[in-house]
Every structure is written in structure tokens, then in C-alpha cells.
Length: 402
Ligand code: GLA
Image (cartoon, rainbow, N blue to C red; front, side, top):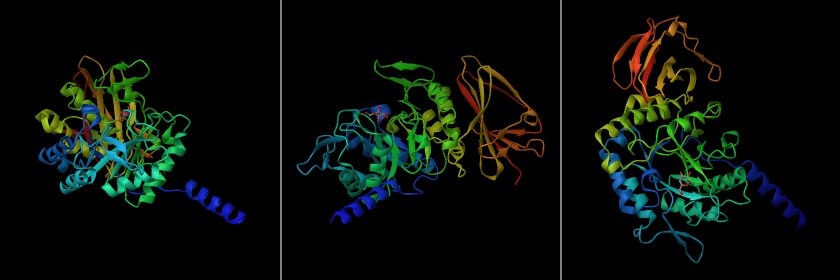
């Protein structure tokens, strides 16, 4: 009896240590929509259905957006067997019906929980109920789980997230696992085999360059989050992405700031989770979010996160190696005045030691395509001259000779 118990313990422990996630669910950064940035706790089934409709009608789906994710506050109470129920007034038809609806549009359905006793919004968390919840999500037809980190006193992040990873795997349904512990426990060092993406920072705030102080915590503007991505790029790649948080495009920043925000998330190979009201977005917002050439930078199959090559006054110059020997280049003007650029490709030693790639402008010209104006802008045989407007970007694709 004793030996059997010891054997069982050994088998159980080794299974936990070697547990696995569902592979290959996010070979390129996930793209979709999440309710939180715009709607906070104000979620209901009509909003989710209408958002799924709008994702199709606005051609977002055609551009690659796929996941419709309900963030915090969808929860009701647990039933007397402990199974979580959706809030019956907000989701009267239940989650299975909602998932079926989203699937009927050719989209995927995502949901939110928390590793602690309660979510950040005070709803029931999954602590101690991980396997039960994972099974419930699988039965509902969930394809994506965002898993938060509020109210986790006494828990260790690596273990808590591994438990939910194992629970999801045991449910048998492939579910993308999105870790959200705000970078506190350096998930980039341990989460490659736990989840498909992990937040690297605290929450984004809807501004380009500011910090919002909430007293006990802060949220961060686009540039602040960008700066926090320093040194993280070597940890990301296909099926395991750094997540600098969901986007605020269309939530009130100016069009140039939104364009810069979107381009930078593309350069960072970040998950492209939109956070605006898709039912009511302006043509301008829609054009930004569906720029397929910029999306192609984000979705490049090599999955290499971009690197900051240089800072020159208010200008930052980012490079991202892409398949076929191409490069994406982003000139970011962080400042409040237009900035003149003159960039001689042949005299710039652009080298990516991590990806083992080098820009070879001396060995042969790359054709230059401007991904926002769609203009052809010559080749790398001549200096590139442009002016980047305040708080804006110029994004290029350098096309290698095929
Ligand atoms: C945390 C997360 C946010 C959002 C809220 C919901 O702050 O970081 O992205 O999910 O919780 O309460």
C-alpha cells in the first residue's frame, strides 16, 4: 500500500513537472478583440454577438482577427456543485450558446479567469477549481483563456499557471493560454512551455505618453510600455509571445498616435488584441486596424520580435527581420515636433545577433515600400529622406531581391 502511494506520488509529481501546453495554437501572434479596454465590467451577450458581427462586417476577420474575448465580470456564482455560471442577467442564453454564435461567424471564443480566489473585478476566481473550470470552458467551446493574477496571496506564479496549463490540457480542448501576471514574476523566463503569450507589464492606459496613477497601482501609456520591452525580445517566438497588453487604437488617441501604437505592436510581434468598440469605429480606425501590410509585419512566420537599432534625438529606429531576407523598419518620432530623417542604409551596420541576420545594403539593393502611404520609395542604394510627423511613424518594408 505504502509503495503504491509513493509510486503514485512520483508519477503525479513527474506528470506535473513535465506537463505540457497545447502546441502550435499561436504560431503567429494571436489577433482578436477583448472587451476590457473599452467596456470594463460592462459586458453582456448582446455586446459579444454584435462585436462578432462587426468583426466580420468591418473586414477585420478578413485581415486576420479571430478571437472574441470576454474579459472580467462575465461571471455569476458557482452552482451547488461548484461549477461556474455566467451572470444570468448579462448572459441569459449561457456561454455555450454564445460560443456557438461566435463560431458560426467563423471566429473563435475567449474568456477570462484569475489564478486567485477572486478576479480583479471581484468575481469568482479559479483557485482550487482549476480542473473543474477548464472542463467547463472546454464544454462551452472556449478557444482562448486569459488568466489574471489578482487575489493570489500565497501562490507562486509559475506553479499556479502550470496548474491551469495542465488543467486545460487535461480538458482535451485546444485552448490558447494567455498569462496575465503583469510581468511581476518574469514569465518570459519560465512560461514558454506554460502559455502561448504572457503580459510583460501592468495595464495599458489610453494615452501615448503618460502614466496614470491609481494610488496603489499605475497604468501606462504606449511609450512607457514600449520602453518596458527592453531586453525581452530573445524570449519571444512562435507559440510563445511577449504581450505588451491589448491595444487602445480607436479609443481616443489621435490618428497619428494610433498609427504609431499599432505599428509598434506589429514591430514587437505583439498579440494584436483590439480594445475598441468595433460596432462604431471610424473609417480611420478601421483603416489602421486592417492595414494588411503592417499586419504582415506582425504575422511574419519567422516570429522575430523587432529590435531598437538606434535613438537619435526624439527618433527611434526599429528593425524586424522577416522571411525571405526582408526587413521591416519603423522610424518612430516620440516628440511633439516633426522630425527630419536622412538614413543611409549602406552606412548603417544593422545586425541582429539574436536572429543572426544582417542588413546587407552594400551587397545588393532592397526595394523600399512605405506600408502606410503604400508608395514605393526607391531602393537602399540611396539615402532615405523623409519627415516623420510628431508622435507618428514611418514604416517601411525592405524587400530583398528574390
Ligand atoms: C487586470 C488585467 C486587465 C483586465 C483587468 C480586469 O488589471 O491586467 O487586463 O483583465 O484585470 O479586471
